[in-house]
Image 1 (cartoon, rainbow over the protein chains, first blue to last red):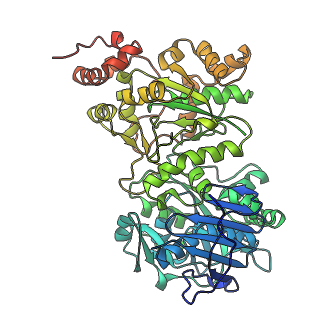
Image 2: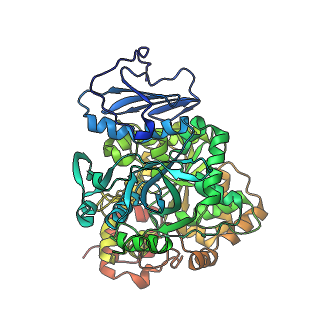
Image 3: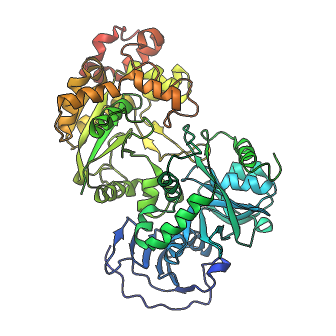
Length: 297
Length: 288
């Protein structure tokens, strides 16, 4: 891809990107974005990264540049809607911003009640969002979908920061769960973006448990790993885009965070069987593991 | 930069057994490799490598664009590794919508293509997919057949076009410009050490006899089956009606396949079956 002209940031009166409250100090600019970094340390197909910098070009949506954890620049593609630009920001660009600011972005959906937060982690198609919506239906509140920012509080305990109230659900999941929500007017293929605004947790919550969903028939990992290294590996494999993490994360701080999560937060595996509708049963297992919090389905 | 070795086969043709053999050979460990951790092997339809190297989830992109980007994902994988990477493939060899080979030659070491008698594949695929024999036979004959189609919910893998059985075989052996080492499942069964030595040599490794013997022993059907019974197997499909490592035999179709379905398969795949010596074994009358 030939380099674009030098970036000349300009401020638009209508910003397509919305930021979570804890990122209120980040500057968002609309302007030309060159996706070719001067000296990229890592390069994917649509992204490049170097310490403190990430660029991403999403076809037919926008180009994004995330810089030093303090600035986001976006360059809309012709015909892209603000909803599409905002939604795509909430994935890799948001994760990059969090890495640059020293937080730990886990690939997880988050739900919380008065005693704390649970993270539902796993890859694409593992059912994180659907399970989170089911927990919300049973009395939990939504902390966010897909990218879960984790940091340590003043006492060194892992906490989860809230991001957005919108969640992407398959049409049948949206219908079957009957969660109180408002449609957001955006679709991603057969998935719909729904807004759980009335069930959104606005406060950071202490992280009480991580549940890792696997979408294949297998193997429930032992809930008692044999070594500290195993524990640590369990957390690091949940990081959002490990290729980007290598370049953007402050290694010492990142290791410290991951170690704190690994040593303090209970970890559970939830093998999920195929695409059959068994989310209520999985939610029951989550509640059982949490000691019966929330109401059973 | 590493090179990719494509372990290509129509589903249930012995790909997992081959991966176990290669994993046990390369590991050269004192105990058998876990079937749930067969080394740094990845599948061509795996979502995570695509999502990470593209930076945008495949589920958020049009399928035609996902297809166009897949060759670049494989290039990124090769660039990021030092040693050769073995990639399980059930896709047929084909071109992407932009006319580029899905499996790029510039990062390819070669292809280990495993072929198996399609008559034995019917029952095996039926159990694996949780469908009846008629459906499994029709899938084998369907030139448009695709694994992991998004029908209800998002499959854990990217869609993989297999074509029909003989279309799959011909795509890799006749259409692809890649160097191919052909392995008949039946030969692997009858002479595992000799066949594995040929595989290893093709992969650019030295087939030391002691390591070959150990790899064969650690990958025996009884061992793979035992591991599945004790710990499960992550690649067994949720709807499967049998263990993944079910029989591991040659010719079980004679007991499992009704003659009309055998005839259907032979009618559809006559020439390719004849090419690999499967027709003489079929002894099924062709035609009415």
